[in-house]
Length: 294
Image 1 (tube, rainbow, N blue to C red):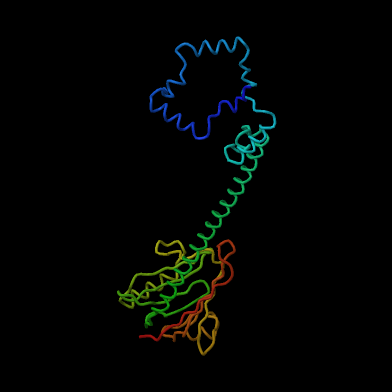
Image 2: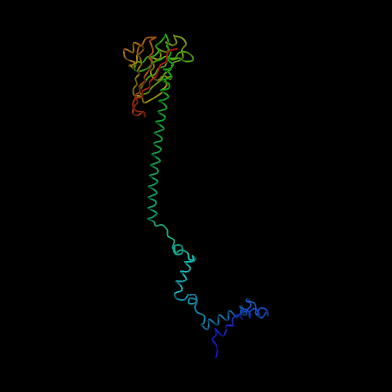
C-alpha cells in the first residue's frame, strides 16, 4: 500500500532541519544559483517543447486571475492607496470652445470700457480741482495786495489820501523811497492795479495823482490781478456804521471828491461780484481795518 504523496514526502517532525544541516555540512547541496539554473541551451528547448505540446496556456488566460478575485484585488489596491484617483487616471484633456472664447472677450471688453470711464472721470475731476485751486490762489493773492495797500496808507497835504468814485479807488501809500499813488480799477471784467513811481516832493506826488486819473487800462504799468469780476463796491466805516463810499455824507469826510487832508475811515469793506464763467460764484466780501496814522 502506497501512502499519499503528502504523507510520503513529509519527513518526521524535526528531521528536515537536521537533514538540511547535514547536507550543507557535507557539501553535497549545490548553491541555489547553480541548483536552479538549467544547463546552457535547455531553457529555449524546454519552452519550445512546452509550446509545441500545448501545455503552456495563452498569456491572456495565464495572466487573468480567477473569477471573483479581480474585484477583491481592486478593493485591496484602493484600500492601500496604490490606485490613483479616477480623475487623474481617466479624465481626458479638454479645451475652450469658440463660443466660450467670444464670451470671455466680450466680458473683458466691457470691463476695459468701464475702467476707462472711471479713469477719465478721475482725470476730469483732477483738472477741475486744479483749476479751482489756481483761481482761489489768485483771489487770495489779489486780496493780500489789496490789504497791504490799505494798511500802508499815508496822509499828505498835497493829494487826497483815499478816494473812490465808483470806477477806481485811489490812495496814497508809503514806500521805502517816499510816497506812491496806487489805483485799483475794474475794466471789462478785469480787476487792475496801477502803482505810480515813488515821489519825494509834493510836486512829483501831485503829478502822479493827476496821471492816475487819466488811465485807460492799457498802460504797461497796470497789472491785472484778477479776472471774471462783474462789479465791485467799496464801503467806509465811520461812526460805528458802514456807508457807501459814494454817498454824500461820506464824500464830505473823505469819499468821492474828498478834499485834501480829510479824515480817513476806520475801515474799508470790499465787495466783488464774480461772473458765472470765472469759476467762482456769488459775492466776495473783505473788511480791512485802517490803523492810526503815524
